[in-house]
Image (cartoon, rainbow, N blue to C red):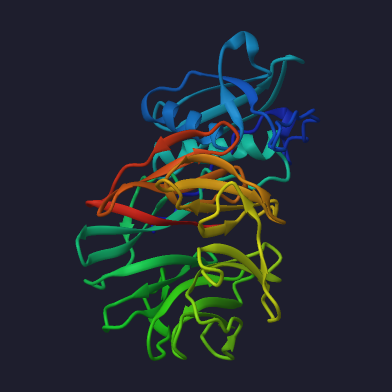
Amino acid sequence: MMALGALALMVSPVASGAQPERIPLVRETDSLGFTKPIPVHVSGFSGEVDGVLKQDLFFMGIQHGALEEAKFLIKGSNAGRVEGHLYDKINNQHLFGRAYAAATLRAGAHAFADDIARLLIPGVPPIAQTKMAFKAEAGIGKSEVYIADYDGANAQRATQDGSIVAQPAWAGRSMLFYTSYRLGPPVIFSHHLTTGSRVAVARHPGANISPAVSPDATKLAMILSKNGSPDLYVSELNGSNLKQLTFTRTDESSPCWSPDGRNICYVSSERGTPALYVISASGGSARRLATIGAPRATEPDWSPDGRWIAFTSQTGGFQICIVPAEGGNVVVLAEGEDPSWAPNSRALLFCRGRDHAKRLSLLDVPSRQVKDVARVLESNSQPSWAK
């Protein structure tokens, strides 16, 4: 992956020597507890930079709109480099200004958007410079793992398996785990993005699928069928100290971790239809998670703030849904599958479309607005947003 160039700062007296002071904002929330967008007005930028900046801000809860409705003004230019300034419109105050000597104008726009978000939404991770991994198909039986910016730009192939790959999962920012059929039966590999080195961490008899890395990148959850039916297992990151967590006669699938690393949510058909279950990562009894309004639940992903579990509902087609982490009433968001939370617990990546012709899309959960991502090869699916 291409690294960003160093950032050259041109800081106003307000921000000299330190980050600008945090701005006390009274943030209203909607009926689901998501904060309502901060109204801003963006001007002075053109072309790609203007579009990238506005989209970045939108998916972080900062929305460009009419000048008269804005609380903050974002002004700047992108003639040769991105230079941006943030103003408090209400108090007529210049908050900060910076020039970004990044590798590309697009990268400069992402960096500026993140700086704005850190100031206006303190305590929430910005996402404009984050990455995603996903599966890209060039035809039936031919797929690879790709890495791209969160918005789909700068896509680069990470694997060269020449076979079927599936379910990429991040372990920090420089390592991926994924399933590959290159050796025949599915095997879970770790793949170091910097060196290109690969290690088979789960190559047991039968299927080795659905790797999921704990938030602290020390444990690996996975589905193995080495004892017959597919069950949930946990190991060290290198595959050692393997422990079986479920012992059912039906299929388990799609594990994901709670943000504190104590619990794992997964899918089981133990009672006949696919449903979500939660179990301690150290073992014990599992409890079924109520998904009222979506009885067939698959592909869960736990939000980084711990409040929600996103999943795919398979009733009447595929739908992206969220449910409180403790279970309860389901909120249907959009048609699609394979949801993956952003680090800010506000946006989701997901895929939609027909088999072997899918595309990735971004979803702002509070507004339900969807933005398609540029497609790589014939079909893109199974996104994983780097946290």
